[in-house]
Image (cartoon, rainbow, N blue to C red; front, side, top):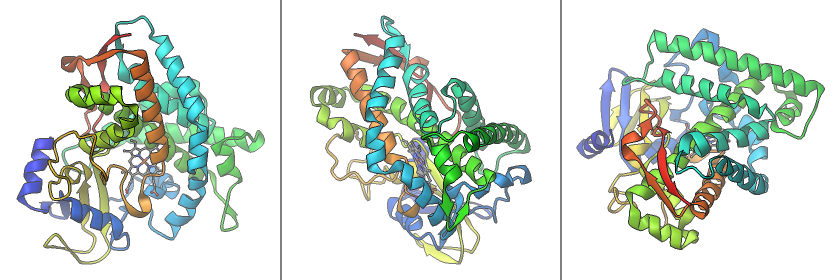
Length: 381
Ligand code: HEM
């Protein structure tokens, strides 16, 4: 898959994938499209009409909105993700990771995804939102259904896949709405209560907006971080010299995280829609064209990154686009970085040796998400 992207990137900055779909493979063009939100809109509803059953979802999901609507909701959500708020989560993340590792203590083989990379981020985000951690298997099922639904070699999922998505999303919305109701009567110090009480331009958010908002956080907030934690261990196993260097000098952990994000980009692509005719990378795109930005290809563009396929702990700066760029830059980036830093440090503290059983690694089936779904590790304390 990455080899195919490399070939496409070298052939041309853009490719016309089908009648109305263009794909972008190079760094400069990707950055330009993400910077110019007036021309490259995040609101795809005009070109990919949303399923009527899911229409309500779009009202709170600000990742698919343009300004000024986007600005209002993002400002509200940002309150929960200030560097101070995120830093305060450090001790709890450390405690949770320790508990998870204690549960598998004494075992010579663990599954990193099942034992740490999945439960850690989903527990953190569930606690932030104030939804029951005990239901985390449900959150996983819903998130998997969403990503499986988006799985496709084309960008438009089939009717069958949509039916699965619809069923799961509706179930999830109903579940979240029940929790919103509970918080209306029983305010707590959590994000759901903040959303219930928040006012945007003097108006309260309605239940549809709040549940879509919660769903965005609950799904975006764990799937990607699960991917990152697994990818980190894969990258360090694949690059033993770098792995040993990080072990010897823990100040290199953040660099290892950034380089993992660049080389194993969790969300491989983003979608935009043109609001006017525009020239990009020597190609004239019509108005209302669907533009797929391949972040995974931009992150390995040799025009931006020297020796792009090499895992290096000394790329400084490392301006990868794995968290996006511009007004939609990932709100959860500080949280994802903190969780992965704590998890990698504690894994290395606990185990002198972590070896990936490559033949047994399984990946999610979606080409939009680069993530292991099973990651067996042989471990030596
Ligand atoms: C946006 C990636 C973790 C919440 C984004 C975008 C990317 C991204 C690429 C931009 C979308 C676009 O431009 O269309 C990632 C990766 C993560 C991660 C790779 C982990 C490694 C998180 C976490 C949370 C989160 C932990 C929350 C708890 C969000 C939200 C947005 C977003 C709310 C929408 C921001 C906006 O539209 O203004 N993320 N994310 N993400 N992410 Fe993340």
